[in-house]
Image (tube, rainbow, N blue to C red; front, side, top):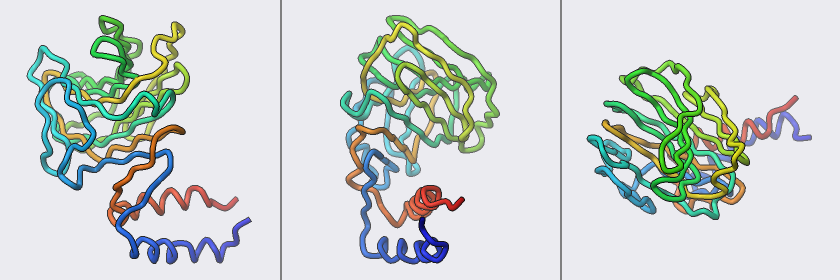
Length: 224
């Protein structure tokens, strides 16, 4: 058991370590805050995407899949992705998981006009599986998260679980991760992808991540 004295000392040790380096690697965690002003590793499928106001800005007027993809099927099969969103306008935005191709993937959709969060599957055509109201205020920043474990999807809004759905047909066993806008636009930032097979981020700015870093350590060392 770690003593209370050790727990009190840890913040000072953490600051000392972070002061000696600008990089930190979390095994099983990939982070992208676009602090280098480059969308490294992201592949555009549709829409217009560019770095803007410190985030990844997507615009799609309607009619095409306005998506960008990240990662490798080997990151799966199970993982989660959480992202902050602001300056959202229009109809829809989404997170994709286990994206096989443009017609086969799982989705956590945010219906901006109706303030709803919906889990979908696309197998040729989209099929809606859940619908729930969310406390959405598009004038404010919000966070969305999608977790896939086995063939169960769980959607979160501002840290609160909104819904869950199990794909009993076990449609997609693997695939990459994506962000999406349709008939609208949004800025995505502070993306965190976590999973057993997710590679550690190779370029996380430790000083900018100090609060999050200490939060993780504090939770891991919480005393009974």
